[in-house]
Structures are given as structure tokens and as C-alpha cells.
Image (cartoon, rainbow, N blue to C red; front, side, top):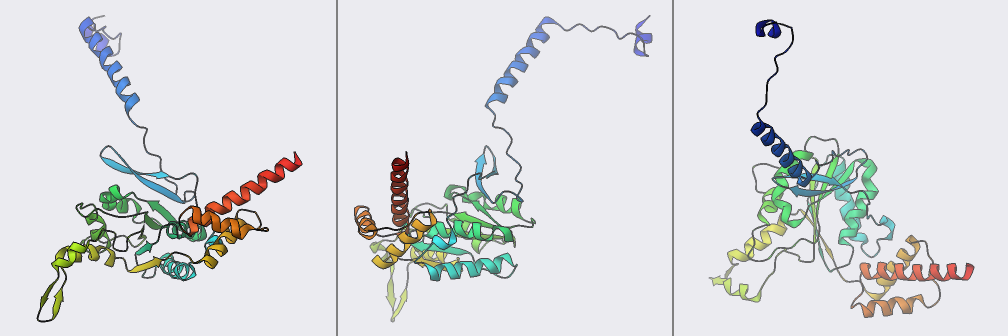
Amino acid sequence: MNDEDALLGGEQPAYQVSPELALLIARANDLLARVDAWLPPPPPRVDWGVTLACRWRRRLSSGYLAPVTTLNCPPWEALRGIDAQKAAFERNARQFLRGLPANHVLLAGSRGCGKSSLVKALLARHARRGLRLVEVERDELTDLPELCARLAGQPWRFLLFADDLSFAADESAYKPLKAALDGSIAGLPDNVLICATSNRRHLMPEYFSENRETAHVDGEVRPGESVEEKISLSDRFGLTLTFYPFDQDAYLAIVAAWVEALGGRVEADWRGEALRWAIERGGRSGRVAQQFARDWVGRRGLARKRRTA
């Protein structure tokens, strides 16, 4: 059989691979195997039907949504001493969930007074109504356009959560957030709302020296441009909720609520212990109250186990 017959359906001619080419192919395969071991696995596909929250993460040149498998959502009823903030925050969320106009939210004020807890408790409270949460780190706010493009058009309502947000005076990382809130020609999707928490009312540091930028002209006061720039960011949040330190009665009420939420009960002398706990930690706050409640309930549970052992 000649070569022409072989090509028409007979036996295929044998082609010889040179030793040099075979060595090159083997080395290429080995190199690809090594590179593949260093590459990260493909990002998981998010099923929002069962996933309530994700974190936005960056990998190489693009970002992806990483599902949160273990949620840290406090009970809504355990958040005491912030009734006015809870009512306003939930009312705005209900408007958003029903497709009505709603404002982006800034929760600002004293540390440990329930700002982040309120956002997470809202997720658990309204997840059945289609609310979902995506947490975004400050340094990844530049990805807001890409992130919003991933969420647009989906049947869920997304709360973009930036926790403990603040910016140094000389950095410009806040500009993508500023443009997303109000300023860019490309608006946010209808199913996306931004919520940020911060210990700073204006999200950026302020200095006494900035008062020198104020000029008096015929009785008119004109603030310096740097002050205007700082204030303009926080002003773009349509709803600002302020949190203040708790007085003693409010702090004790929060302790009692957390003890109940953790399955314990308040007993004799708990008030004195709760107040000493707050003094040792430098102040009364919801976070301090929760920490004391965990210690109180845990110690008593451990003592009961020892008695029954």
C-alpha cells in the first residue's frame, strides 16, 4: 500500500518525532503543570437563592464574589438603646425592598454602639424578602463599577456594606465611592444600595488649622475648599444616623437583652459586675455589654456543668 492509499483510508503513515521536539514537549508539559499548581482555583458561582452574604475579593486583574458560609448576624431584638436609629434604618430598607425610592445610609458615631450590628441584623431580619449583603473593603471601592455590573438585573436587593470606613487626609481612595453615590454619569443599579459605618461623621480627619482657610468678606463666611471636599463625601449619603455613648441605665438594659439572647438569665449582683466590666474597658457600649453577657452566661454555664459532672 502506497502513501496515497493510506491517506484515503488505509493504514496511516507513521510520523517520527525528533528527540529534541519530544524533550521540548515534555518540558513544556512539566512547566504548565507547575504553573497550574500556583494558579488559584476558579471563583465559585454564587447561588443567591441560598447565599445571603458575600465578600468582594480581588484576584489578579479582576474581582469575584466570595460567599460567606458562617454569618455573624445578631438578633434584631438584642439591639437596645438605639430604637430611633433602628426605626429609621429599617424604614429606609423597607422602601428599598419594595422598589421605592430610598437613600444610601451612613451610620456614624461612637465605637461599639451598634452600627455594624444593626446592618448585619437587618440582613437576617429581611433575607426572606430578598435582601442580600455584599461586604466591600475600603481599598476595593475602586471596583464598584465592576461589582455593580455583576449585581445589576438580578431579582435580589443588594446592600453594599463598607464597614469602619475612614480615609486619610492625603489619599484619594474615597473618590470612587463619592462618584458612585452621586456624581458619575453612570448611576447605581436600582437593586443596589450603599451602606457605610464609620467612627467619623465626615469620614475624613479634620484639623484646627483648617479654620485658617476661612475668610471673612463683607460679613460672609467662605469655608476653605479642602473643608468642602471632606464634607461633600458624607453629604452624599441621604440618610445619616448618629450613634452616641450609652448612659448607665441603657447599658444595663443592653446587658440584660444580650444575656437573654444568649440563653442565660440575670441573677443577683449582676449589675455590679456589669458596671465593673465597663469601667475596666474604658466605657459603656453595646460591644462591651455583649462581651460581658458572653462572659456572664459562659461562666454560669460552666459552673452548672461542674456541679452536674
